[in-house]
Image (cartoon, rainbow, N blue to C red; front, side, top):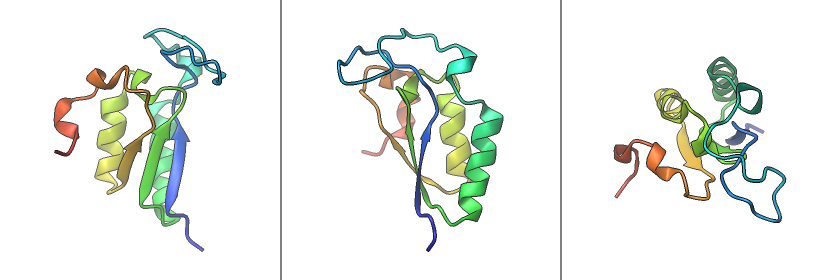
Length: 102
């Protein structure tokens, strides 16, 4: 059986303070130790693609806090992944507006 969808928790931080979540209110800056590197993301996406994955869900914490979120979306798009963001929406303005379908 092929893997069709993968979830990547690209940050271990959040800009909200939900009672039910372990990440808490981290603010807008995410230190390197709380986020995946682009090199790691690139390698995992390539491996997932080789295993047959066609969709990727970016989550975390809050994925829009990753300082390289636009590059991550470009990279996954170049590999023909259908992309999803599991976000609270607070930081959605950080993503280029032309990325969203009407």
